[in-house]
Image 1 (tube, rainbow, N blue to C red):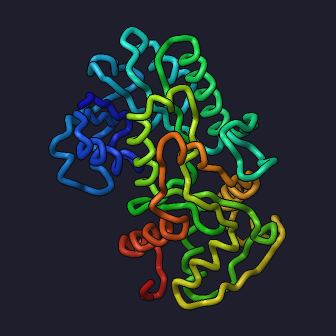
Image 2 (image 1 turned 180 degrees about the vertical axis):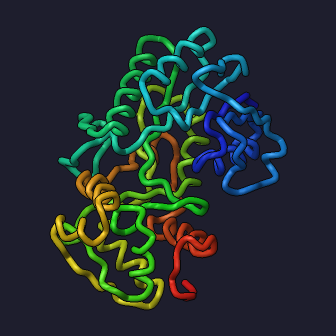
Length: 314
């Protein structure tokens, strides 16, 4: 049994990860900035030590962890402060990265060994954190493992739609058989992953010494194009997909600048991430396909009143 501290424990991944860790016999300290409950309750949370934690002020080393799982580190400065705190005792550090450490894909599937070409604040920040952690491990400091999820999906929060954005109208359009506007012939690639599959990978990485010093993609077994996702969602409602392939200016006119920016950010990267390393080293086996993860997400969004599919079952 080990003492595992989870930073960001009540978020998307932590909601699934903390119960997994408890069931595996770990003693879990769940740190979160506020008092929000996890997205889904489970009896295992009753056996967890929950602490309100401000990473800019509080010292994670005070909890005497054997391992720290950091799900909400976004800047190199945050990572440096954490390493400084952990260096005296050197617990295992598991960091949540992102497949956006890769920029525009040149070869697919993208492996973890591809040169990093991130762009945008989020991707660049995670790329710099990854480099910092690996250097720390190589030089005899805090041992670390970096896991790179794709577009995290599951019930409890909005998820990236087949149009590569968070526009709830996309789901309604597909459910009712109306034409869906897509740029670039709908060939932008998206690689989702269910939050519980990400949690599975973190749980496995805790007990795989061979993982230390490496990065791993954590995504569904296959990526899908936007038009492929749209066709899959339409089929849930017994419909053939209807597409309206448009230029980027026309797409922005129809959906607005915010949703267009998200679609461009997702589609232009075109990341199909290989999970061969995660399978071999971690024993990672994703339970959900991309469409299965999205279906579970959409059912929650409908039940929560955030999406209208015309009362149809799917």
